[in-house]
Structures are given as structure tokens and as C-alpha cells.
Image 1 (tube, one colour):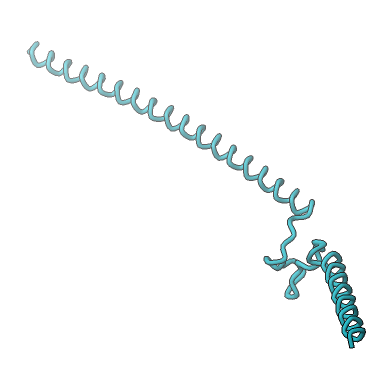
Image 2: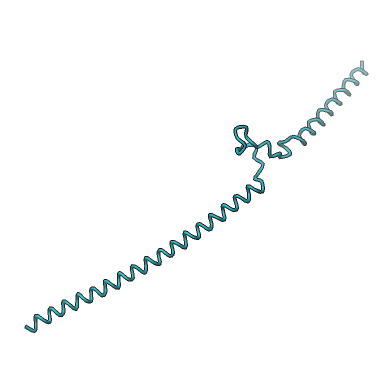
Length: 122
């Protein structure tokens, strides 16, 4: 009876060891644990990914993002330059209008003075 219990305990221990080794081996070789990018692909479409399986961007995707970012920076710089140029042109136009107004005011004052002097002379 003691031998049977010992044999049974050894068999249980050996089975537990084998199960633990099998579990470790499964975990080490599983696609999710090895970060296999194929696991993130959705069954709905090839271009879709499962967010809960996301393994990070590949080199091509990173380059596409960097390219897009650089393009956005260039567009922003162009917008800024265009806005500065527009403001400069607006300021020049306003200065021209101001000068024309000053000249017009001077001409009106001169005309008013000439009329006033003409009336005095008569």
C-alpha cells in the first residue's frame, strides 16, 4: 500500500512536471508571446489590425508617418510664410491709403484756404 501511494505520488509529480514543462514551452513558442505580427491582422480586412494584439509599427509604417509629419511641417511653414507676406502687403496697402488720405486732406485744406483767401480779396 505504501508503495502504491509512493508510485502514485511519483506519477502525479511527473505528470505535473510534464504539464509545467509543456506550459512553459507553449508560452515561449506561442505567436502572441513571440510578437508574431500576423496575430494582429483582423479577419475583416488585411489592412485592419486588432488593437488588443497590436505589436507596434513596422519600418515602412514608421517611415510613412515620418514622411507625413515632414510634409505637414513644410505645409505649415508655407502657410506661415504666406501669412507673413499677406500681412506685409496689407501693411503696404494701408500705408499707401494713409498717404493718399494725407495728400487728399492737404489738397482739401489748400482748396479751402484758396477759397477763403479768394473771398477776402473781393
